[in-house]
Image 1 (cartoon, rainbow, N blue to C red):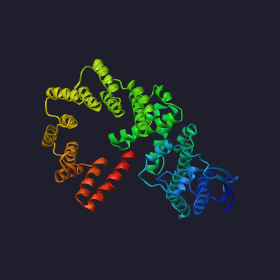
Image 2: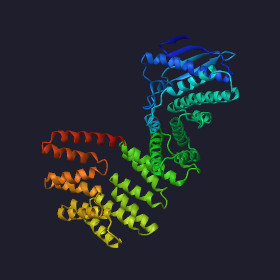
Image 3: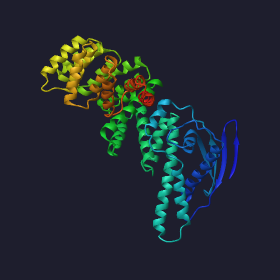
Image 4: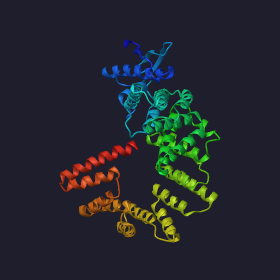
Length: 467
């Protein structure tokens, strides 16, 4: 192999030869040569410790370097020699939202071993003893096709992070769903979903989401996956001034999905602190909520989170006029009044609601306790929380509120720890709860436990900030 490079432009030119094996034709030899010449170049870059411009966290350095770069190939007439002009790291700094969207598919490390294994199979078949030639040839062609699919997939990824979305759509039919790696298949579906959201092809987005569900993902997981994609790509469209109008005007994209896109984008913008834009997308989402009560409740919670409780109350009033009074809307009104610190009014409405309910509801009881707590009516609050635990002993919110009460108000560390540690058994806690536990252990001079929960608090804070 001959290799020369121009440092200024970071272009590497390499030539590689390979004689056709017994099952090869021009096409198959070109596929193998393509992989071999790229592999030789990238291995040289790895030896130089060249850092890839694109760093997908579950790709190895080899794969990240090919996604970060581009190349042109020139074959001789009989396809036994190829010259590759490889431009290293010529991808512009990738958009953070596009990178984040690819990383939703994390969980399985993908390395160059995918291609190496294919090449080993190719060489093994070419070197095998004669016999069952037709069967071996069929196997050979299938492996060659897989190698081509993988190279196309990496080119597809590279085009995506370059924001060349129309080119991505053109190449998708070549990549298809025929990759040997199920995880790489998932990444391709993921990127195709993002590309079609950006390009306004709603029908294809829905098809991909349905494929994900069909492939075995639980419904809630699929909804979280969709929400993550919608929020991240919605934010990309907003930040790059492309806007979401293209997908909103696509009649093949259902109204409910348009709501989900706008709502998820609002939440995504809120997480990065752009509350002005978050409110704008939330108001737009209202127009697509329709009569779906769950959509409306999510909107109310989001308005309260943005401290727009008066807007939330107006929205609830409008819903009650359109759909009639419902228990869930009254309950939402109670939470909204509490968000606006209208605790006495919230308590009156909640007590009325509890009378109308056919049975004791732990959520309402806990909310009633919260109302009493904010009014410093501690004995009444504790009675509510204890009643919650009589009905549902593992109800985490009541456990946490009782633990906080015994710590902050009574300095009863034994009882506080009892409730808080019982809550921890139900699942991960908010970082501030871990901080309370850590502080209790510090005051008890139990240094090892204090440090253990201090670390838990820091880890929970990082996780919650990331989420």
